[in-house]
Structure formats: C-alpha cells, structure tokens
Image (cartoon, rainbow over all chains, first blue to last red; front, side, top):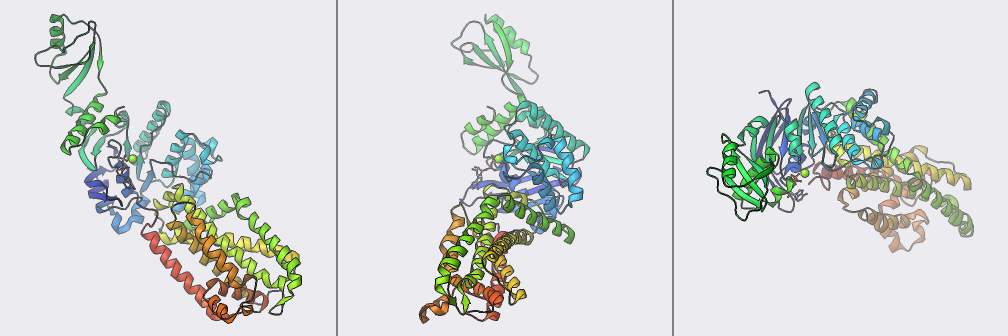
Length: 322
Length: 257
Ligand SMILES: Nc1ncnc2c1ncn2[C@@H]1O[C@H](COP(=O)(O)OP(=O)(O)O)[C@@H](O)[C@H]1O
Ligand SMILES: [Mg+2]
C-alpha cells in the first residue's frame, strides 16, 4: 500500500456544548483511493471532514494529509485538499465564474492559469452556460456541481465530499458519479465521500468505513464487506392469509403481515429446501423479492450492533434505509 | 505559499471586496453622497452663513474636513463589518478557511477593501464639497496620511466587530451607539474651544477628535490639538487592533466550532 493520502489517529471532538461528537477515531485512506465514510445522521461524518479541512477545531488526536501533520503546517496540508461541504457555502450574490476564479486566487493561482482551468471544469460540470448567473439562481444540483468545480480549481490531490449527491435526482447523480470516477481514475485524485446512499458507496468506492456515534464500527474494503454478508432475507407473498408463521427446519421464518413471510437464507443453504417445506405445508407462494439492498441490510445490522453495545435505540439506523 | 502567491491572493480578496461594494452602490456609495450634500446645504450654506466663522475660518470650510472624515470612518467600518459578517452568515468564509492562506493576508485583504470604500466615499464627498466651496490644502502629505490611516483603523474595527457578531443587529450596535456619538462629539461641527473647560478635557479622551483635528489641520492649517502625538496615537491604535484581530482570527473566534 502506498503512502496514505489521509491518516487520522485518536481523533476526538468535544463541541462547545460538551457534546462528544468523535470518540477517538482512526482512519487511513491510501493515495488514489475512492473511500466512503458511511453513517447515519449525526454519526460524526461532517465533524471528521470538518477537522480535516480546518472548519472544526479538533479536541485531540493527530491528522496527516499526505504525511503533513496539520498541527505543524496546516497551510501546506491544505494545499493538497479540495473540499465540497454538505451545506452550500458560497456567496449567494456572486456569479458562478467569479466564485471559481476567486477560489483560484485564494490558492495564489494567477488569472492566466485559472481562467482556462475554470472554463474546463465549468464545461465538464455543465455550468458553462451559467457562468454569469448569480449563484443563488442555480438549481440545487447545479449548486452542488459549482462546489465541486470550486473544490477542484487548484488541482487538489485529495478531494473530500460531504454528501455530494444529497437531494440530487437520480439521473444527475449518475452523471456526477461518472465525473468523480473519471477524476479518480484519470487524474489520480484521491476521493473521500460521505453518503447516505449505500448504492453510491457500493457503486463508487473501493474502501469503506462505517461510523456511528463518533466511533468507527467497521473499516474494510467494499469487497470484504459484501463477502461478510452471511444471510439474505426474502419476502414471500402467499395466497392464503396465515395467523402464525410456519416452522421450517433450519430456517428463520416470520410473518411480516398475514399474507407475507420473511425468510432468512444463510450462505450455503438451499432455498429449494424451504420451498419444499412450504409446499408440504400447503402454503402457496405467489411472488418473492429481496427485503432490501444486501448492503443496506448489513449496514443496518452493523449499526444496530454498535447501538446495542452503547445501549441506544436503533431508530437512527433505520432512518438511513428509508 | 510563496510571496507571489500571497500577492495574488491579497489582490483577489481586495478585488472581491471592491466588486461587492460597487455592485451594491445604491446602498454603499449613494447614501453618503446624498447625506453629505444635505449637510453642506443646510449647515454650510443656510445655517453656516449666520454662524459666521469658527477659529477664523468660514463655517462651511470648517465643517468640510469633519464631514469627509465622518464619511471615511463610517464607510470603512461598515464595509468590513457587513462584508465579513455576511460571509460568515452565508458560510462563504469557509472558502477562505479551507484555503492555505495565512490569517494576516485574509485580515489585510479585508482591511484594504474597507479602506478603499472609505476613501472612495471620502473622494466623492470631497468632490461634492467643491461644489460649495474652494479649499486649498495646506499640508497635502499629512492630509493623505491621516485619512488613509483612519480608514485602515476603522476597517480593523469593523473586522473585529464582525468576528464577534452573531446576528445582523450586532454589526449596527457599535456604529450607532459608539461611532456616531464619538464622531459628532469629535469636533466635526464645532471647535472644542467653544466648550466649558470641563467638557474640553472630557473631549480629549475621544480618539476621533484627534483624527478629525489632524485632518482639518492638514487641509486648513488649524487644529485644537497638537498633530504629532495624534499621528503617533493613530499608528499605535492600528498596530494594537491589528494584532488583536489577528489573534482572534488565528483562534477561529466566531468562525470555527
Ligand atoms: N457546532 C456544534 N455544536 C454542538 N454539537 C454539534 C455541532 N455540530 C455538530 N454537532 C453534533 O455532533 C454530532 C455529529 O454531527 P455531524 O458530524 O454533523 O454528523 P453527520 O455529518 O454524520 O450527520 C451530531 O450529534 C451533531 O448534533
Ligand atoms: Mg453531515
């Protein structure tokens, strides 16, 4: 593994009101990676990225960006960093192109160099026609893309995106994915994103960390994570309503409503066995589907486990899958 | 960042600030021009002709330096206070915070931006004044020095105000309750020699009095106070407040959670 683009050790954050948002997290993101930080609302994702980008003052711990300790030379570290925050944070009254050009100036990039680069980014992100429009007049999706253009103007080696596709419609989301994949692949930009959409993490990211209540509860490659999945739940619609779930040896069966069974199938089990048993019991299955995205199930499971450990109800975790 | 990059960044901030106040000129450049024209007409022409002279100068000429200074003070201050606070409010201050810029460049950029607005309005008011009277400036170098330093000083003040401000009201409290009274009582409209001895002494505690009088001395050659110590005091204030503002900014006061 090459030198990490981002390395975090024992990071804690206690906000002014005494709330402990991060409880000592460790994280490594290798150079060139496409990394997902996944977690329910309030888990500490934005706080983590906030510390990395200097918007949040850390309480303790160590953060290195390309080997540069932010406590030693944050200015130099920031040079490598492009930031797309969760909330819109540009001046509403300024024009699209001015916003991107001004950002270039903050990195000391002369106009001559910034102008063609701004044009290319705005074209790639479909904003060139809007270059003279005040930013407040853009649609939500355009505002997100404006923040991406602004974050990339100084050619950062590490791009961090905090829920970049929240509130963006499916079609646009896919084109943004394509864009991010391309800069990761072609320009070698390391990308870290936080997201609510598991599908997004699954489709884009190589490595993943799951965070809950300010703790990393899981940190692995996407492939390993999917392999860990040992059970899958199917929903079976049945013809005649039942009052009690049938017993099928070796399977976990429950009645999710009088005309629907939830059947958990573990790795290595044959689904035929279950159907044969249902047949013998005189139960007719009319249709069947997966309960949810497999990853989603795993995610809920992991978060619930960590909630159970910290004794907190799992409602928060459910929210993410809805 | 190397000196060239720092220079590019500084120019970027100043240009952005100038673009802001010229874009909204009906809110920034027009009102002081109208107000000051009214002052010249009413106090200078109509009432001033009844007052006669002040320290041997026609009343109209006497108030011109004070009114120019008053515009410079309020405009420098409110430019930085509203621009920086509005950036805080819209979170666009984060654009600067995530960049590698050192704090002193950020501070300097905003201060210069505010001073440009203050001096710009000062020039407009001076031009208006020339419609009513002819002034020949006695000490041009001193005049320019003191007005530039005053603009810088109040820009820094506006910056500190914006760092502490949590809502829009917070950036109008100081101008309303501190700056305006101190300016009116700072010898803009009268010579402190007109006051009873006790109030003369009290007036000497007002820093704005020194700036107005030094500026008036530069233009008219008359002053209530001695100019040398006044200039020294202004410079000392600038250094002190700049250091304080920089310290606040480094600590992330009002901008970093
Ligand atoms: N400025 C703040 N002051 C106090 N608590 C905060 C502040 N910002 C965030 N929090 C709390 O910290 C926790 C983590 O927030 P955040 O990092 O924004 O979560 P996420 O991005 O994962 O949704 C939440 O419980 C949130 O309420
Ligand atoms: Mg967040």
